[in-house]
Amino acid sequence: MAITTSICSSPNQPPILPTLSLPTIPFTPLKTHHPLQLHLPFPSSSSKSGGNLVSNDALAVAAAAEALVLARAAVEAAIDAVAVTEDIGEVWSCRESGNESGGLVARRKRRRKRRKGLEALDEEMKRDVEDGMVSFEFVRYEHLSPREEAECCLSLKEGARLESERFRVVEAQKHEPTSKQLAKAMGMKMRSIDKVLCKRRESQEKIIRSYRGLVVSVASSYQGKGLSFQDLIQEGSIGLLRGAEKFDHEREWKLSTYVYWWIRQAIIRAIENKSRIIRLPGHVCGMMAKITKAQNSLNQRFQRLPSHDEIAEVIKVNASTVKLVCERSRPPISLDRVATVRGSMTLQEIIQGPEEMMPEKMLIRQLMKQEVEKLLKTLSDREANVLRLHFGLNGESPQSFEEIGRLLKLSRERVRQINGIALSKLRQTSILDNLKLYIV
Image 1: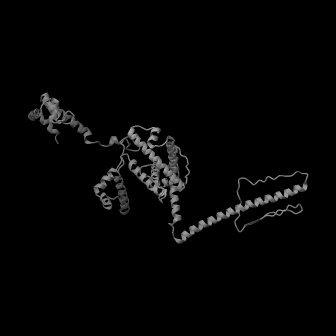
Image 2: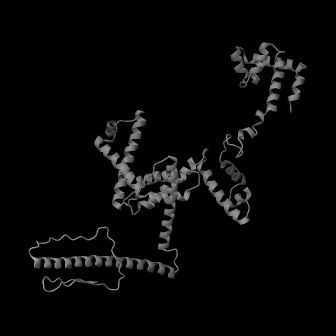
Image 3: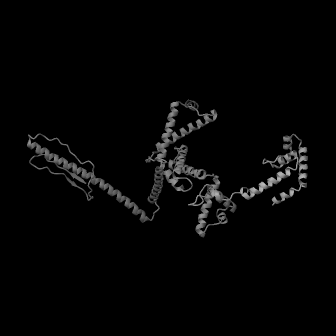
């Protein structure tokens, strides 16, 4: 590319306009928002020859400036064309070599996965904003240099040390310490403590903003397991900060590689502890994952639901264990839930309760209680009281002879004798035959 410009200031010779020579580059007009404006001083009208000279020179300068702008536009177009050519060459080289799962394709897959997670996050945020639950602002991801990451991690470690010291003081004094007490316990000044807390908050915000994409990418793999996408991102962010506190910047590790496992662990633990109304132990949740995986594979193989014995054979456990885990993993159902879509009858109204709550059983118990009271009326008050206390006929728990003796101020042997005499009297009465109807 060459730009040739010649300007002649002689009034007798016309100025030679600048010439532009470009080597076979497609011309694209430059789109500018502000047109080029030249402000040149014009002399007074008394000197016509001077005015013609300045006018000719101004035209030449304007033409040269326009040529320079066009040249810059051509250079930018050439750079864009070279970049596009290089990208096309990389794609075709990958296709010709047959390495479709190479670095370029892998990067594209990761970008699609992150984009998919962000789209899901945006959709859920939009729904929550429409419902008036949250107010969402777009946060631009910030890239931190290794030095900035090390500074943030050190600030988080210092803040964690300060927080642990605060917990120790709380346990010792049984109340929240003041800033002065905390500064004295740490051997620091109050201004230094405020500075540490401020740096900790700033470091947390920086790391969360920088690695928000990683958290979203990991959280998108655990959707539909009992927690909303927002809760998964929140738990992943907590794991991110915990991993950043444990990160050692002196080793040859990348922070993203280190905190990935902390994010994943925090999300998995949150699903285990918070996804159900009734919490299940961790080993039961792990067994559930194995059972689900084996059930899906057997379902594809047999084209039917596998039995507990078949699942137990695959995962090498007892069938009773598989049955127990499957029963415990069922989600609870509210008794106030409507039984049908259009009806108003709840499950509590149609589900059969225990046998003790059935009307027939309750009536039989009431009649049997009346017959027992008739039997006790044939005895003396002390004998009836001993039987009520010993067998729990008054609705309380049964008591031993020693406990009854302390209550009635009698010896244990005397209470035993009274109990025996009362039972022998009941065996001789005719009312006892009425109780045989209630014996199954």
